[in-house]
View 1 (cartoon, rainbow, N blue to C red):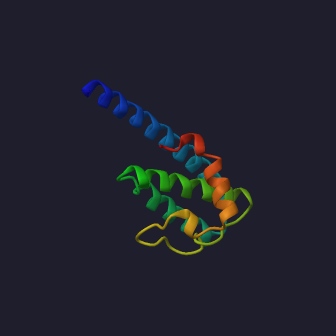
View 2 (tube, rainbow, N blue to C red):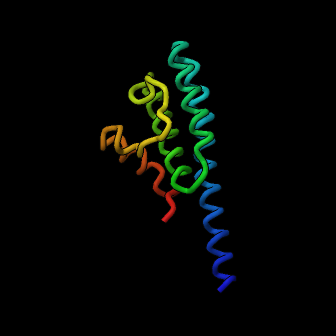
Length: 118
């Protein structure tokens, strides 16, 4: 029984590592793209990224921050920022599906579904 628990823990750790790798990859891209923003927008993205880096206390937060970073990347790829990133991040991050249009949320999640933990 302990052997199975150890294997499950190893599998979960590996999946978390993949999610974090995805997050960091998108973060690097965001850092490059944010250079094209005006100073106020650049500062907001920096603050959001800092918030997301500290949002890693549990699996739900790790997944949520990955979704946010993916959304920021997709948004910057299109050349600018939009809600909710036009203002400072809230103390508690809502689920991304609650604040962005459904079709955009599905694009963010579908593009990363192979990294989702069951």
